[in-house]
Amino acid sequence: MSDPVGKRRDLTAVRVGGRQEGVIADWQLRLAGFSEGAVRRWRDRGRLHLLHPGVYALGHPAVSVLGQLIAALFYGGPGAALSHRTAAWWWGVAKRGDLIAICVQTRRRPEQGLRIHHPRRLERTFHRKLPVTPLARTLLDFAAVAPERELRKALAEADYRYGLQPDDLRPLLGRGARGSAALRAAIASHLPELARTLSPFEDDFLFFCERYDLPLPLVNRRIAGRKVDGFWPHHRLIVELDSVSAHASAPRRLIDRERDLHLRRLGYTVLRYTWHQVQTNPDAVAADLRQALEAAEHAI
Image (tube, rainbow, N blue to C red; front, side, top):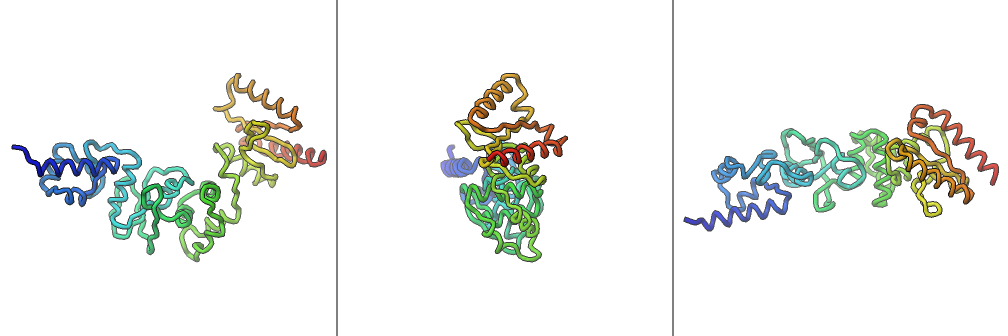
């Protein structure tokens, strides 16, 4: 005999889970009409797979990254928000970590794959449809767990993408607040051009120039229709950075030389450095670049 109530209940669960990347919470199953016995039967039949206590995947245990975030937030309970590195990644200012970090308002036991924080005061907003700590708060929390370079990169990205100025962060830098010292140091050495880099090598080159007290270049600007890695407009000097992966082939090297020739015909000085040179012989690279900058300055 058909069971219209059961079919309606099942269809409701599938629809709810379908809107949530295949993830559904225990309380949503209850609202759909599931009893404890019905939940147990679905688990026994492989229709529900436990992700966290009270949180399930529908149909199969493999869920997308977005589904994993939703599952973590469901486990965190009402008022939970993505935080720390996960929030920085969700805002688009940092790389994703191995664990999902959330802030919660109620006590939650540690769970595999999650990092759970219990702040005294939880602030949250919504970004791309998920609850997340506000960007300024995210940077403070990120400062407590991130290496210096990653933090400076995140600060530059927040400036570039959202117009978040370093001064906007100063009210958060309270005495004793975790991350305050690191964020204060990042603000003091704020390097906006880090937001325009497209590779770790380009990041390294900016830090290299900073370390050797060289003028900082503009990054990834177009000159005569060609994008160049580093550019000092006052000196009409261009530096191209040759990574092994992007510039090792003979056809690529031929293209590079044709580009250099074209730019020199237009009156620019073009220098090329490899990742190996910058990493293993930085003193020589710094001396070479400084000499080129000084020669260009004298020629002006």
